[in-house]
Length: 168
Image (cartoon, rainbow, N blue to C red):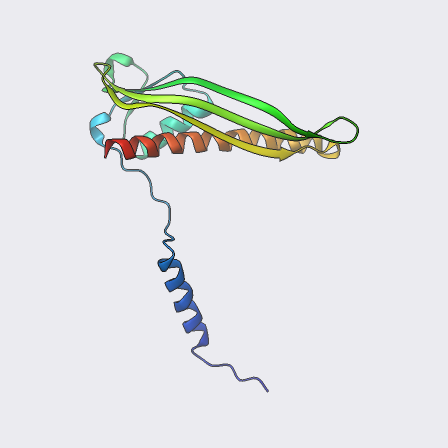
């Protein structure tokens, strides 16, 4: 014979919420960029590439206009030395690649229209690992592409957050 205490669920919920609040958990918010940097031109990366599209999207979602014309821009987001590398981390007994690392590195800075530095040059590295299996070759190709897209999203998010932190 098991009796359930009616308020035990509410007490458990309340304790869970207090724990989450106490540990500093909060939902991720979008960055708050100053509108004075608008419009921005992105230099050094193709506007139609994954990183170019992601940067444009994140800037626009923070009410910053993006332009493709330098002479109309108040600021320039300059991406330099953007590299994508695949590196073998391990091989299996037959000498085939068992684990691969995808590594994307870049440097960026933010300049105003007169080329004065607003955000000094900073470097970012983001990597992801995945396991290769011969049986799932097609799926692993798709996984590698998705991981690469995820890295580009992470790079764009970090760039926006660093700009926000520096311009505050």
